[in-house]
Amino acid sequence: MAPATSLLTDHYELTMVEAALAAGTASRRSVFEVFARRLPEGRRYGLLAGTGRVLEGLADFRFGTAELDFLADRKVVNERTLNWLADFSFKGTITGYAEGEIYFPGSPLLQVESTFAEACILETYLLSVLNFDTAVASAASRMIAVADDRPCIEMGSRRTHEHSAVAAARAAIIAGFGATSNLEAGRSYGLPTTGTAAHSFTLLHDSEREAFQAQVATLGQGTTLLVDTYDVEQGVRTAVEVAGPELGGVRLDSGDLVEQARWVRSLLDELGNTNTRIVVTSDLDEYAIASLRSAPVDAYGVGTQLVTGSGHPTAGMVYKLVSREGNDGQWKDVAKAAIGKASVGGRKSAYRRLNERGRATAEVVGIDETPERTERDRDLIVPLVVDGELQPGFTGADGVKRAIERRKASIEELPGAARQMLRGEPVIPTVFVDEH
Image (cartoon, rainbow, N blue to C red; front, side, top):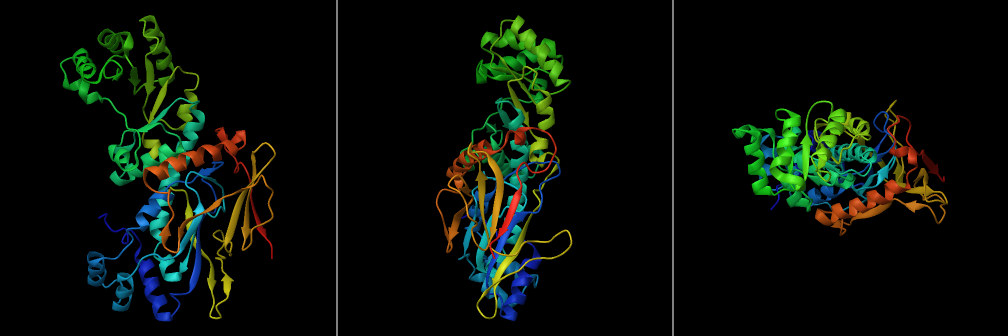
């Protein structure tokens, strides 16, 4: 049995439930929405990731004996609330954008309809997953956009929390990365994994040649040899002497990567290894990858900048109550009015307005009712959980495959400016339509 996810939350989520139970408002039907008020500075679109992980964790959002004992020992909530938590399982409905979908400011990414208490205690868990995964996926998408069809490899596990490493690998693959170095991500989600050797393997041996011979003897001539532990030129020459013309690749991890890649390419060609690939690593981000466009690089290995969102480690998503039942049983739209943090009340609908060429021109968000749309326009909100029942196809390896296909189609809809590194406003506007 997977560990419970119910304590991956903030203390005040449970104290709100306690107060609502006492006030008789815990069972009021409510609608909460996840959205981002803005994109990270300079970003022109976001890429949603983490939805599948949210749904996987929802199945384990339970309060068993261990969780209840902890809450009782710490006197977090009273006996009445503990009894309510003991019987908790989410029985509401969740709709939202499909994982892999592009989004913009105000996009209603996830909608939770249930009793107030049921929806309230999910807040921290939902946001912690979506904010991290989406930050990684959005950064990864920018890297893919400038990689010019050269494959990118996720290799940032050692730069983040061990569980975040798995999430980051999953998000990167959804965004278009070709493989990950993380084996648990490969096991959990069916992701392709890859890896060869680090500098320590070369240093282990009495000479670079002996290290290369050992690696080739085990992994074959198609392996990639790390050639910058000592002198790059000698490393390349030794790699070719050991593996011959069938050498799969050489990896560069330091120095001026643009000039070094050009020089190494020339040397490899001179030595007859015209098919040997050049892989570069070393704290790459989207700007470094863009600068390498003119260099003869065949693949990129990306770590630190990817798993930290390339300067934006959170997507800035929030979770707000937008509608709830009143004492009279009628729905009432509600919104936060604080300066700089205002929200828009009312249950949302959303579609992407497309022109005759299938290019996106606006994100249209309707309040309480779906605005009129054309046949070209595409609905964005799909059912994820219906009356407590998870809908099929959104979790596990199948969920990743589905998210990859959604990302491909969504990226294809965007105007060409979305793929450029130019800073600016969102590439299409978000238009709110209130039919009242």
